[in-house]
Length: 395
Image 1 (cartoon, rainbow, N blue to C red):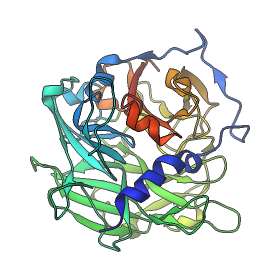
Image 2: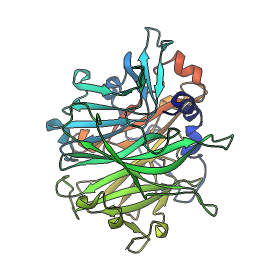
Image 3: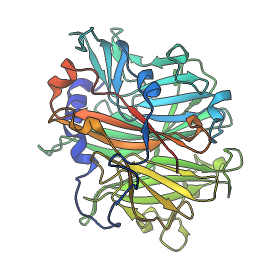
């Protein structure tokens, strides 16, 4: 097993630099939401409270949610179980002054199950792995190398199986960025397991391209849109849309699609080249820019599609774009919320906004974003920083 703590600590310090740099970039000027400085979105404190914990799982980022019954419609979670994934996670205890215990451990990924669609702590079960000494460890670990680790991304439950796209990471030699993406894996596990991913399969997915000729590396699986009847999509074409990012200075959105039955047959994936769907991942073109590493694309009841993201990768601005199809064209970015935690301390920052449609109420979207800090001591002295926050937005 790799030296997980060191790489995870580095990730917490340097992740924002990989997520992007705010500033002017192609893709349209940001449009302020009309009503007030914070935009039309409003806080959802009851969902914040679900992740405000003082023992066991006490904070993470990389939050994704997947309905195990496959129903992505608003309110669909009421009759389902939601599977959650997280990236770097603190395991330990937190005292009454919000300080973490000395035996706190930082692991690369954890998971959870939520019964029903309400943020009831009694209905939430967090799980992680354990090492040979019985200490907390990552829930899923690559079988490619002892130096690799997983940062899980989005996925889908199909026919009793959870499929989860995950970034495969390793330490890097660059002194500024001492870790790097080396691939994308597709993980699978029975959806019926009471302990998610207690057993699982993993396969290298040809959904990664290294940086080349001045362009950043490419990773797919950062968001999944099931535009299918089974998912309750308003205008189903029976495809899964698997979204990617080209990690340029201004992050670019890429799109692939595949039939649900072919999710593990990578030769069946097709990539949007700006005009049609092609078999070569290298022919994919960006459909918009200024997005974040993590985001979401969801269908709306009126036939539009909504892209939710953190404007310019790393900023206090949660933004949306509207499109006419799963590939756009996408309108100008609209800032819907200014995250107050971005100025909690001089070192804090916010990132990776995304929607959770099946946990939303009809006519609105429940959206999460992450909070972090450049100063690792702040993680130890204020456990309130490193956990997801939630807002509601009416598209």
